[in-house]
Length: 428
Image (cartoon, rainbow, N blue to C red; front, side, top):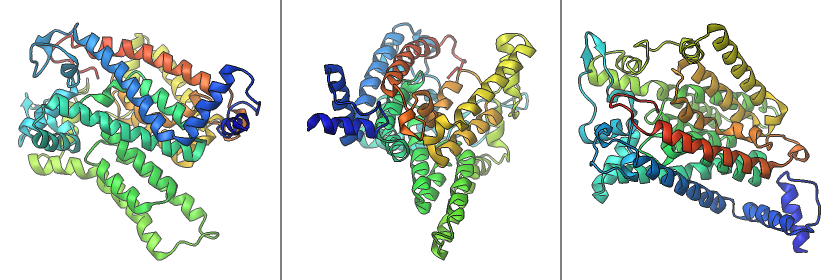
């Protein structure tokens, strides 16, 4: 009876055809699938924390190679906590301790790098917790990110489970939490917070909880600039609901709630630039600040991808060819039947966010972090994206392979990008 039940659980998650376990490996596999099915969130949190311990060990090892003179707010002794607030972390610490400047710093009439490039929700939460606990920025900020990351992967698991099943959801979370840039989930960065808000909004849209989606979309406007692609997903969700209006009529109250989702996304896309304008008196304060991080000194759409690939390959034709192959490959992965299990909401997000990155990103090493938000595409990578579950082959083994590759790549990422080579650099 136990063997039959285990096999049923395994088959329900898109594994191999029903076979009564006859070997110890099959028995352990069936028990694992059953455990994930019954206690998905517990399994997700345990896997997430184990992988964060791995990242902490790597970060501590990297800390011993770091020159303290290059670290802002350095104590002179490099350790794990020092590494949690390098690079952009020092900007958030500046915001927590000094706030946002009333005047934009300039040199020769050109706006210089300043805190207005960084959204306020995360540093505000850190500031509150620091005053409540008396803890330092590094400890409070990194632990907050760690906790929010745990919430994010739980929401991620729920979101994916509704479309692809519990086992697929667990596997996606494992690959995500082992990915090269995953250490930022325990650093003083906004990725964890933004993922909580984004995944919550996607889940609300998937469940047609319009008011919840509107509130979370609005909150993203103070956490991270993802409201524009999220608005595209909201439009898709509203269209899907409108398409079902004959079988399920839309009442007046729901029309209002649906409209609120678009309003929330619209306000979120412009609220931070408006606040920056109001505080500094410069209409383009936010965009000019963002431009200070670009090689051209201003925000230019689409062109940086070609320019940076040209710099990387030192050959214009090869750069364009590689870029075209990457774009076509991304589209094939995202729209093919091997990604149907994402469903319309997650697929719309992957496509909208991908186009958004292509349009606005000055692609370089920070791209690693931005790709964390592309998590639904991992369903295709592990072979769990097929809607017909009998076509999902070797999902568990593929997951193990991707986790192993991710951990190895993560070591390189930490060793190469977390170590400051000069005081003004900003690779991540």
